View 1 (tube, helix red, strand yellow):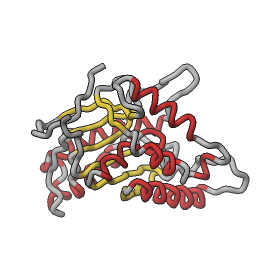
View 2 (tube, one colour; view 1 turned 90 degrees about the horizontal axis):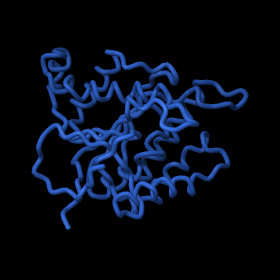
View 3 (cartoon, helix red, strand yellow; view 1 turned 180 degrees about the horizontal axis):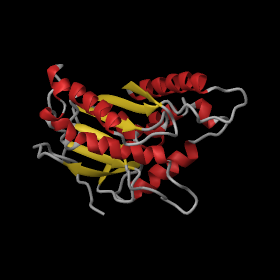
View 4 (spheres, rainbow, N blue to C red; view 1 turned 120 degrees about the vertical axis):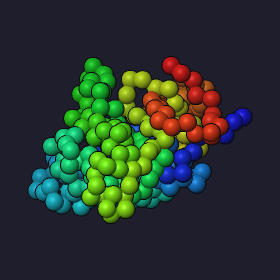
Length: 246
């Protein structure tokens, strides 16, 4: 059997604390266990995501950063916080530059982001606009902005020259062509998600997470899996696990 794809450095770019844990933490754990450096870039602090009486945006931001840091530690990921306001996110040129700075600084060969085209994935759910904005900003930062040194001469002057990302993995979309076997890391994903106590309350997400992962894995013969739409921007001579196209 050929060796599964593992990036040297993987950068996950999402809108809120807990976005990764709901959808991608199993993959992050697989890659971290295989030796990858895993970075979580969390654009907003999720600082309006509470109905608790007396809660403030400032206090909630502190809580949610602490929860996300703890969740990252479960799978071996480092967290970077950009501090944008929850609910107001737009794919602005300012945000794009912030992401380009991080991409040039950390030089990931894989970027994982949310699908900006996913408006209503089911008949009882509307995708959060922050998710779509974060996805668009991430894709716009990856290509072509991050690799065009002349685009940001001030960053180049700091030594942050262009960097080309090899692969982009888009999550939470309708199309999938790459599946990661998370059978060995499913429990880590669940443990990481449970760190977001401010969002979960008394609810145990275990049955739902297991069901989602089992349904995804069934498509390709894995017990549990996460699915992505993989965009290959450079040809890397790395053998990969067979990934059925759907």
